[in-house]
Length: 156
Image (cartoon, rainbow, N blue to C red):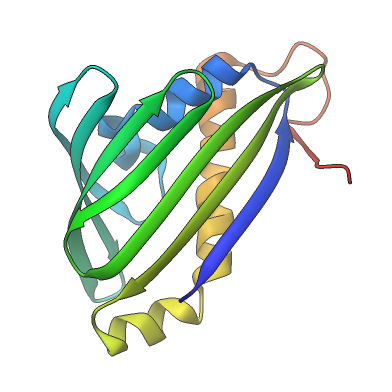
């Protein structure tokens, strides 16, 4: 039901941003509301991962299959947990200034209580999550060489 799309130009290379998003095991170190992450298995370009999210009194774990197509695309397919469905895509498109990130997420909880609780803050929560990845890029890779802002709004 709630879905969110964000397009953002960042001053890092596609491979750098891809690596940050693909490093699922480190999510609890920097992602808001992610309180646990475990990669169950990884074979080639595919991993099976468990994430635990917590906010207020809610705590939910879910399993996803993560398909990696380095350095331009990450597709997350929901396997098991509290959702009816979860769709998530990351695209990292080369740009002369860095990388254009296209992010998409769409989900529906099985529980109407959870759906209503998240629905009220969903867009802000996802914006914070995307911002956390950008901050992580600065922490891991340093300030972009151009000295410009970490992220610039997408044009067009």
